Amino acid sequence: MKNFISKYRLELLPAIPAFHRRARRRKSLDQGQLVYYGPMPSYYGIGEVKHVADGFVAVDFRGTGYFGVHEDVFEPQYLIPIPASTLSLL
Image (cartoon, rainbow, N blue to C red):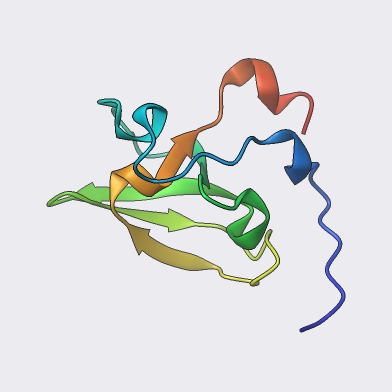
């Protein structure tokens, strides 16, 4: 893999496994909301929710993570919303 350096401080995002209580907590993910892949924030980076349907969430990561993924679809328990208070730090 290429030598990856993110323009975001992804190390500030805590890793939260998919089946951890915080990841399973009922959350509403809305279009335009910023999220990250909870188990390993650096893998996908920071993404924007593009569509929510039938229990799945489509996210546009714009290649901000180590894997260089632009878009992917997840079950909600894998995604963690980024609080507004944390955005300015990233």
